[in-house]
Amino acid sequence: MKILVVGSGGREHALCWAIAASPLCETLYCAPGNAGIAEEAECVDIGAEDVGGLVRFACDNAIDLVVVGPEGPLVLGLVDQLTEAGIKAFGPTAAAAELEGSKGYTKDLCAKYDIPTGAYQRFTEIDAARAYIEEQGAPIVIKADGLAAGKGVTVAQTVEEALAAAADALEGNRFGEAGAEIVVEEFLDGEEVSVFAICDGESSLTLAAAQDHKAAYDGDTGPNTGGMGAYSPAPVMTEALAAEIQETVIRRTVEAMKSEGRPYTGILYAGLMITEAGPQLIEYNARFGDPECQVLMMRLKSDLLPALVAACDGVLETFDLRWYDETALTVVLAAEGYPGSYDKGTEIRGVDAAETDESVKVFHAGTARDENGLLTAIGGRVLNVTALGGTVAEAQQRAYAAINRIDWPQGFCRRDIGWRAIERES
Image (tube, rainbow, N blue to C red; front, side, top):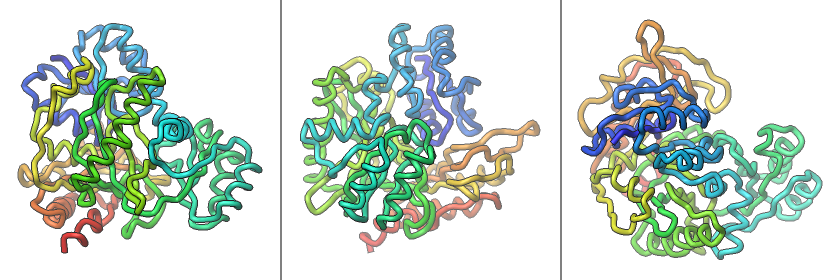
């Protein structure tokens, strides 16, 4: 098969790494890719949101399957246009991707189809939002309705913080069109877990669960980011809990989307809070998580590619995937200043030395080669140092030992990824 992966981050590097290992993969392209992906695939200089350019490339090169990594091109309708051109594509249509493209749409769907989630209201006017926030009190959550690169959520601990977040979006235009409407929702207390399911419009295949760390600094402090680390499996996930999530969240959502005339094909990513009342949906994403994809691909024993094709062909119920029992843990190395402003073009050394054996893999997220062939940082989240271990503590030790071999003074990472799970183990 000739395959095109769309995207340039650590998630796409992990997908390319897994797909390249399949005996079904003859030729692998990635658009636009990065310096690490270039070791697995031929990188093509087409932006991930250049829908027309991607469709032309797929047609001109007789691509058999396009795997769409990030949410942007999904919301823009890349899958729709590829399908119209006769190209098989793994990912939801634009209509189905609204599960991620509009937080308000997802909350309304949950209310209509009895999918457990927190109480909420949607607002476009600041005065109404202020009145609701003051009535509800804090803690409370303020979300930009649209895509905001993982930075559109404020978990406000005070009413004043919540009012400021609402004003930033609705009056300050902080998130542009994505923040023209906000969702104000109940704060859910508990332990967060990420659940992923491959869907074919009718059925679903739930994958291994993972947990991530969104806060920038140790102790889950600092601003929210796109994710500073993750691990899988999730210790909180019991067989009974997994069955409950499959029934009340995943299955109901797949059936709801079919009923709404928006059948869901691709990865359905449920961000859940495990509360005293049971699992509650925080949000949906229409693609693999980043950095959760990295730990899932490290643990995956089966060939991923046939499952992706089966989802596109609507025959997913005949498939199953097998997983290594070991824990995978990934730590994000980010540029100093992230998720705010940061320098680009700084040199990174020692990445090869970090990969001491098959238990450690460094996935590239924001890297490029300069004119002299030197590895440089061009993004906020730059490397995902991922390791396998018999326990979370062992995987963590291996990951940080690998990080210590990387020479990048302008980078930083959290030093406590997996701390909750390690406390459970001890």
